[in-house]
Length: 292
Image (tube, rainbow, N blue to C red; front, side, top):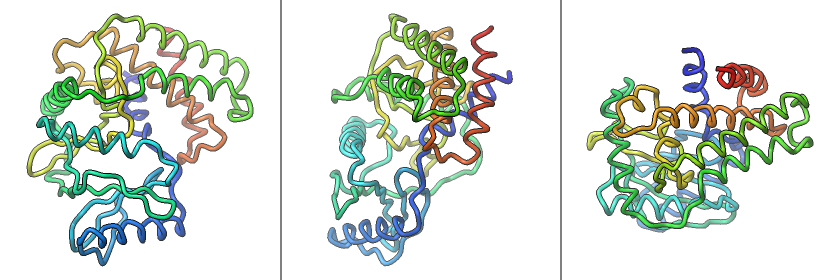
């Protein structure tokens, strides 16, 4: 369906942030290489793998993956703690190279094992579902203080309510978007489904096909909530194969996710390419989805 196609596109943008500029990339790279060298890792070169709200680098010849974010980045410690605990209980997660958060100048740096991808093809839905089921099972064994999924919904609602931050959002659309976030917030919160630690954004970009199997990465968005909230970020076929899913709740979580990502596209500071056009398009799709 068209709504499913738009929701799938939205899932790919959830982790997007403003890209670091060239000078910032240079300074962040220097910080990562300096920290690696201080740990006895040989790092003479760094290739940029991804540049958004944090910089992802492949350091050579030590072949270590470094993630660098501004010092104000508050989720690095949670990400490291979560990944380390999950790795210890045998969950399908990428391994840390060093289980700590390093601070250098105004950057926080984390170091991870680098994995070569074994395929450029889409991960089969059945394999994806099994990997996510294993991840969730491991997460039920981990007890860490994490945000609730409703905190992220509240952030989107606050953005919509702020006329200064969303000046191009028409009053009628603002009212619609705010009421949609409120309604779906209540529906998902009151579903009665068990809640647990979640990845937060287990979309295809955060799942690697490696020689050791499928591994999840990027745990900075971990939160608590029903598993359907996580499944809303995965391809639709994955939700069909995941055992014990409340499919009505999953549909509501997908619509909620679309409402959140639509809200972020109206942020005056949003730097997503062609973001305003997408905001208009997704707002239209959201209206169609909620009219059904």
